[in-house]
Length: 127
View: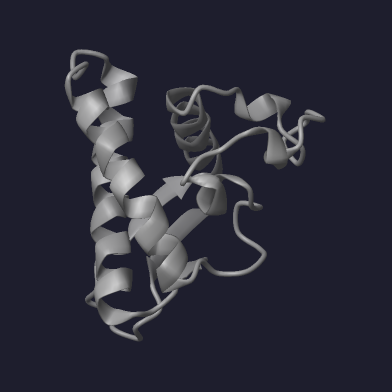
């Protein structure tokens, strides 16, 4: 059982990105760390720190349940994409770390999916 993120364009040949639930959690923790905060301290992730305390373009991706809740709009995808690409570029400079390398691969795949959502003006779906 896992999680798949894909464009809501109705095209089964469109790119997608998938994780196990624990893999997606680790990916999001690593993204939060890159943004300078610990995801486990945040409200909804076991902590009591409000999301209003942090500023990140990744909030629509980070401040949500794994596989329920609203889909991300193409506007959300457009906001997330540049920051995700910048983080992936930072991670690429540390590619000797095996776990970070997998997060880099996942970030690039997610960026491809987000780019398509923006281009086609469709939401990012979680399943």
